[in-house]
Image: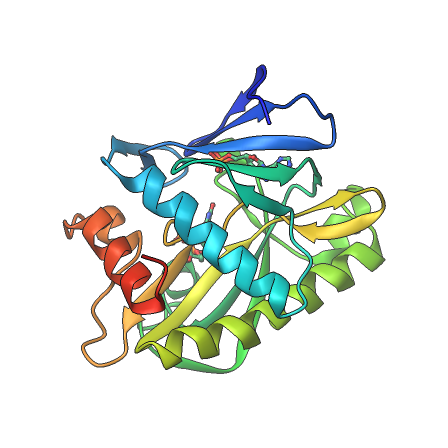
Length: 235
Ligand code: ADP
Ligand code: UDP
């Protein structure tokens, strides 16, 4: 599949057209950003590890019955995906308190949530990705009720599969963000599942192995992503 015209450059990936209008190439760059693009750095090897990590997770999720946009790896940094009409909403599940929920609700980090909790955010960096509810999504026409139900159902199904995958490999899946889009009338999981968009701690030491290492200047960012990948058998 040939890489055609560059369509858009996001904060971490670039999207290219292909010679088939149903497909896109996602190019994973080394660029790493946090705080809605206010902290940016290039971390050598991050694009490659994230591209391979995402391929592993998407293929695992397909086997678990989750429909995804992922087609196949094209190179260390490129993947072929179905072109989706993206829903401009981020679906977040939290199994353990961390990040923005701690600030918003005045919580300590590291408390188990039972049941796990779910949040929607509007995908808009300039507004700082504000938290929204399903009424906003319907009122502003970002998705239909059916799509909202499907996004929630699939995000929880992903949680059941990935919580076990990570815990069987000695890690805690603290939280994560998913994005969905429609393809010929079907809602599919899009974008990526990588350590850039989730929190993962070592089960024994509770050491942070995800993008919080970048957000909190803890160092060894790519090395930590590689530790997760090795524990899961990605590399
Ligand atoms: P950001 O949008 O947060 O800056 P990225 O650099 O990861 O992040 O950009 C990737 C962009 O591609 C995002 O806007 C995402 O919603 C979009 N995207 C991901 N998968 C697909 C897909 N299959 N079809 C169309 N757009 C997609
Ligand atoms: N997340 C993401 N992109 C965003 C916002 C959040 O991938 O634009 C992920 C983040 O990495 C974490 C989860 O979603 O795994 C919950 O993020 P949170 O709301 O705690 O925001 P943060 O404090 O990480 O900005």
